[in-house]
Length: 155
Image 1 (cartoon, rainbow, N blue to C red):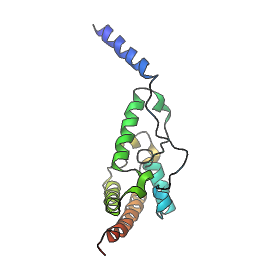
Image 2: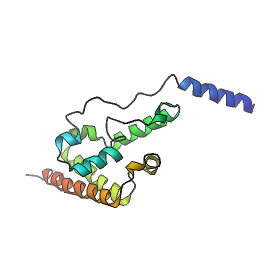
Image 3: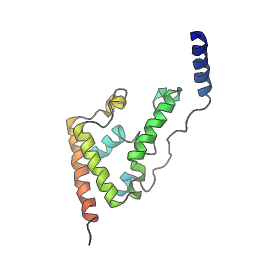
């Protein structure tokens, strides 16, 4: 019985290799991208690209293991979830109120250390933020947050 179950699982995994999920790649940066519409300091931009953009934009740099099933399905789900919460490629389509809220979350996430996720930094060591990087991103997000809070005030 165990042999049949293992054989069945193996067959499923082999079949999955022929039906990979769609990749989150784009050749161009849309005009709604954060970097197209906001002034972002170079150091913060570099940090966001390295630590955030793979899961929170329309352009993922896939690691070598991304073409192995079922890992590619796990990655695709992870990216879809990340983009549901925040998609930097769609930044300018957010309302000022939503931008303010997202910036508040960004600041909180890097300050408290729950972003980037441990499961991401485990394999992507370069995405682990230093104290200086966390502070720079948090400070930038808080500054931009104020801008959007002011935009949302009644005139």
